Length: 602
Image 1 (cartoon, rainbow, N blue to C red):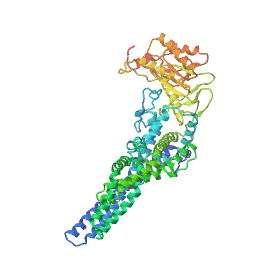
Image 2 (image 1 turned 120 degrees about the vertical axis):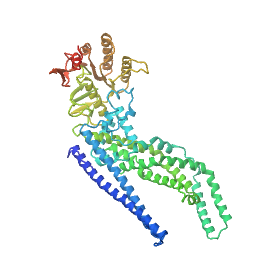
Image 3 (image 1 turned 90 degrees about the horizontal axis):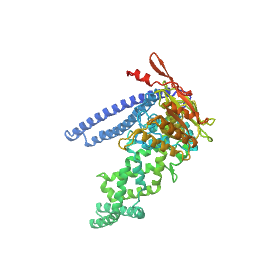
Image 4 (image 1 turned 90 degrees about the vertical axis):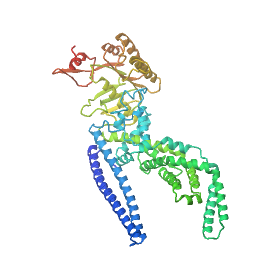
């Protein structure tokens, strides 16, 4: 069922679906309890019948078959109830988390993506992409490592303009597909940990040791029929046992030739059996759906190999894996050995790898792409007022109206405009008192640029930008292990950002308290040279400072740089901030007032 987000608020939709899932969960829990009690009753009845048949001999032993059959049927029903209950529990959690996001109470409820954090990345740590309360935790609803990896890669590097527009179309279509997004998000709890892409891809790409014996299955089929015929003839008394053993020995000798290769194949499928189950579930969610946008349609088309859908191919492999597992059954093993069951299964698995093994990596990529797009689609669905940015060509720019920080609660998010690349303006020198909002403004522009270049919606009334490479020096730390000071770490980061200007994409530079670890004289000279280097490379950006001497940089830049500031005011002895961007240089500092506010006598 698709949901038209324009007809009702996301919170109302989530509350309605949450109520339905809770109601269904209550019903299935009652059914599961009834089935459990019924199993206990049937088991007790079976014991009574067993006693009556064996001890009292009142009934025929054949009566035991009745409770055994009923108990087996109840086990199947109970397993179905259990799976249904677990799926509904995950659906309840899914909508509860969605409501938490809508009420700005989402921190700590999702995956933080800390494994993707990289202190050397040009902006990941500065813009809070990963970690508790991060952009990744807010956006990601992926249930697999593949989806998380793909979403992280989208946030960590800008896409090409055409790819961005294609992702926007996919996000726009998927945000209405609430049923698909719920289905993908409520797969088994162990999907993230158990679905090992590297293991499965490696197994499919490994050499096929049985390939050179392609003629052998037909020979083994004949020998298997001969074995069965000899066994039947011996049991009927029409064949001497020595002749029967001679027939059996021929097949045994043939089997010994490929025994080691067969063992390797079966060992490999044993290790990947669980992965096959999970991957097939994911693919079944996606394949067969008809999408309008080319980006999604192209990915569903990749789920077909040699005219066979990925789901059908994996179901075939799962059956073969089940056949291989049956060799471990003590009752079936003798018959299996007679007809070379394991060997024939191993050859069938090898044929499957030859036909479809090279497609496994593509299938994983499709799942990752769709889950990443679903994460952005969920973010878009929950914020219907937030638009897609406009990706344009021409002069480097970042122009937005009423731009807000995506991670701030709606009640406290103050929005400001940004206009870089307009009328020759390439940068803003931002002065202001402590805690007035300078760093938040830099992160606001940076986070929205990252979302825009990933293909998502942005927190703004409108945003227009050219393709950019974001680079930030905001959260630079010293390192005791590396023996580097904070100042040295900062100038290394600045060197990294300047190196980015040599790449094809212009840089959006975000510099917070530039060179604050040195004296005013050196800071003034160094900051002017660095900012000039960025401006000369046709980059655009924002620079914050406490040192009002740096404001003169803008005055000498002939319209390429402009001074702006944030202010505060004292009211009833306390400092208040409006977090609004104003033109010009800040006129006052609040450092002494803040010290007095916390009790320092200055």
